[in-house]
Length: 218
Image (cartoon, rainbow, N blue to C red):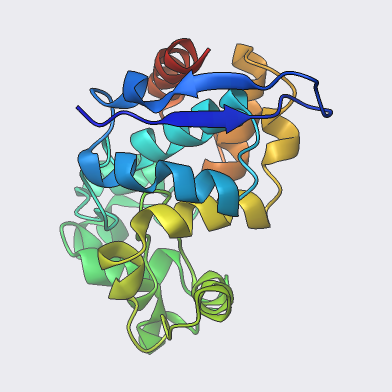
């Protein structure tokens, strides 16, 4: 069993630091994630167990418990009408795009987040990847500048090489820690979810995962 001790400073400097055994997470996250936990804590300001619990809960939900590294856009017509009502307002349009992930991504992500129009193909090219589903050309470009590799030319780097780092970077870049620091209530988990997801999709599962990780780390 992988065992290591993580040191956190809780809020302001304390005379005594709280020691937390990362081995408490070993049955809840994959080995690959365990191997990087210490480095991402140091690199991305996860300065408390609370921050780490919020981060892992969101990453676990977005990736189906760290299994899915690329966004699944294989929606049926009925699902398109429910999930993307802004872009699919009638059954005829939904039927045209149903079960065609590339077409769906190019439509729903067109002309935003730095992407070109639907015909450009940017929507599918820069669809969600990594454990937090980094999405949009602007985010890929900013992450490329941070990591020092060209994720615009090779978007699969986000999913294949940097799934955890890209997720951590997203939290840090968007200063989600200020929300995480507000506590462990359902209201705080919901607020973090809105910043990650843009809504509250999957909130029941996110709440459950947060409680699991929070109990393991405190």
